[in-house]
Image (tube, rainbow, N blue to C red; front, side, top):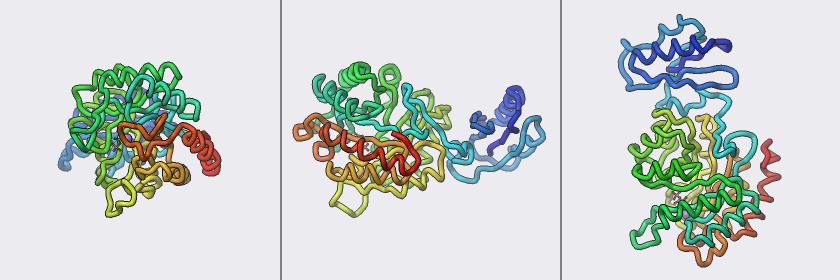
Length: 339
Ligand code: PEP
Ligand code: MN
């Protein structure tokens, strides 16, 4: 259920609704929109005796509406104007397109510093790099772990970009909360509900990637796990799905972009690097993503992709990254956005 408050409902009226909702064993999430505040009520689904319909009689309440979809807090109905997530001062989901870029993995101090200079110079707004790498093979490079995270933090601070890095397990939450601006949940953990719940108990922005075989509704339900624990700061990332096609690493599902934008208020960004696996396809698919309505991009950039320890074939050289950003700008403007 969502309880839509009247435009001029007072704080006391809103709190009275939340108290009443919580007495019925629901959680009341206050969502303050531009035009109205709603109290979204979530909890285990039960029978009629717990109906919240009577709350329409409370002072300041405009309407009590059922949310029939399985995802509730993620649903666009609770925030029709869309959410804008602040990541260390960079806004994702507003008019301005957000570009996060950096190497697949932090490999050394020199490599990450050089990557940070390259993406800053090329026009990125956030620096992204993996310190804990979820590799398909246990024998492949697993990342520099906590040392990698501090190298990324240092590089981000030096060039003045907030940092994004992937967290793989709940035991590392404290470390990431202290050192990263945004925590990525990768495709392989996209339905690790216990990790998602725990990330929901922090207030850190979460970049939730779509799982390799996750349907759109399942993707939104994964986001719902984070939201339902009280963390509203979720950005969704389309990164390609597994299909029968093997010419590309994944099939970048750009249908997902306008569809998600209709279904949810959460910002949606696109990762054409993992979505295609081939650097020559990254720029055209980045342009297509922005044309389709994405709020941002995640682009892998390496100072020398030929010697990268992971994902070499899809990482852009610094000059190609700068070209991509320059090419995205007019497309963004054509669809009413800015860079
Ligand atoms: C990554 O972003 O480096 C990564 C491993 O991506 P994904 O989880 O989308 O495969
Ligand atoms: Mn990668």
